[in-house]
Image 1 (cartoon, chains in turn red, brown):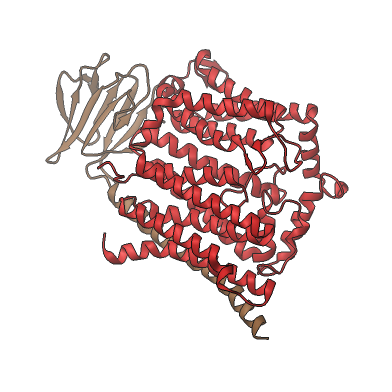
Image 2 (cartoon, chains in turn red, yellow):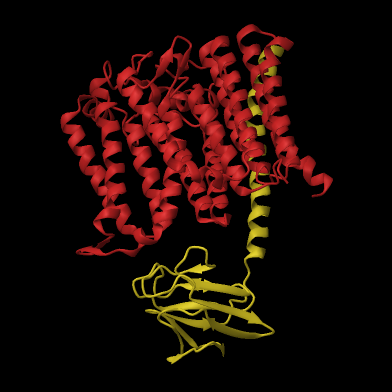
Amino acid sequence: MTRARSLAQLGLAAQAGLLVVASLALLALVQGGSWTLGDLTPGLIFASLLLVAHSALLLAGYGAAETLLPLGGVLSGIGLVLAYRLGGEDLGNHQLLWIALGIGLALALCLVLRDAAQLRRHKYTWALLGLLLVTLTFALGRDPNQSGARLWLGAGPLMFQPSEFLKVMLVIFFAGYLEENREIMARGRLSLGFLKLPPLAHLLPLALMWLLSMLVLMIQRDFGAAILFLGVFLAMLYVATSRVSYLLAGSGAFLGGALLAYRWVGIVELRVDAWLDPWSRAAGHGYQTIQGLISLASGGLFGSGLGQGRPDFVPASYTDLVLAALGEEMGFLGTLAVIVIYLLLVHRGYRIAIAANRPFDRLLATGLTTVLAVQALTIMGGTLRLLPLTGIPLPFLSYGGSSLVTNFAILGLLLKIAGGRGLHV
Amino acid sequence: MTLDISILVLRTGIIVFLFLFLAQALFLMRRDLQSAAVRHVERGGRLKVMESGASNLSKGDSLPLLAVNSLGRSPGNSLPIIDDSISGDHLLLSYDGGVWRVEDLGSTNGTYLNGQRVEKAAALAYGDILQLGRTKLKLERPNLD
């Protein structure tokens, strides 16, 4: 690696940091008429965190960190600015703390973990731990922001959302399970017309997974998580077996289940109705969608400018509907840039999956990337009223500790799979 | 007045900066794609799938070959073919000094070259048909693009 190339690599992370500092300066100018060093401190802390992590990863030989870390970094940086903008100093400081923890975790995964395949040995432990956490939320879950879904564990300021961690744990389990069984699953014995399905015993995991997503949907009323779990599972199943019949069977079963849920589960019906016709429910369940749409529309091409719009009209604009706030203040151009960044991030993730040599690594990278992609699509679609609105955080951008830490862990694992020397060689 | 101007400059600057960032990321990734493309250019040939049996391959697929290729059912092969009629480690197909050679690795159902069973190893030419289990593959010249 030439020196010029290394400098260029660090440049991307440095620019992500600079972007945050400049945005904080703009916020201070708009809100107070002048800026002080104190206003910029969070940006400087963020920039140094990112730069230190980036140089450490590049020094350890993680070539993929070149674009992956700055892409995740710039998204979390914009998220940080929006947390300060929308939630004030407290929320912003929390977000900075979570970003620091997330970057630390990504770094630790890369440098301490010997090999991503190490995770495979404990796949059942991961799955059990994840399910245990979720069972706990069934029993002890709390709903601190009255969203209608009890998804949090913990008390006071120490709240976390186990379903966030479950995403990664389940992907690890799927990758291990599918690697062991993909031959049998790919074979196809049971013929149902044009569908070639594997022997019944091997359909069991698919059925179990479908059941789990339905349970999450019915009991926890978390439509977004249900789509995510099943979507990620089907994507990985497809990569493992290259059988389209699984995709068809799985999506069909999900649609059927979703129709039942629409009939029998109140909140699902409300969400879907509010999606089809929010305007007649503008004061009720369509309120959030409509405020989000108005907010987005008022941004226009260039946006009102950071700190100069009124995204506070959108309920909970700093968490799930952060895209509306972004669209209002940074306009279509800013939103477009963010969407392209997601695209590049997901592209990079799938490239890592394609380049991976071992089936487990390939499946793991596919699953982790799909987690990011499905989340971004579901919530952006929900904000734009292309899909029913579901409570899923926008990866890296939304305020929320569990989600941020999980997303950085995903980055760390992807980097690990892409390869580097680590501390062990 | 100066406040308004500095706000405007910062606002515009941030958006421009964001797109510059994107352009650089794209540039870096394009280079990565190009270098990956160079690595995957095949030298010696391709295998065209003539018949796929019940395997994961589809008829008409054209599979790029490396200098040494292992074909078989187990996932560790460079060209895994998932089908009951194929052994875990079925055959080796290698290109050395301008000649393609196939070597049967003691497979249960055997390897056939143009319909003749390959006892241990055999040389093959472009256009030859290789059969393992229910799968038939034709050796073709590499794409030279």
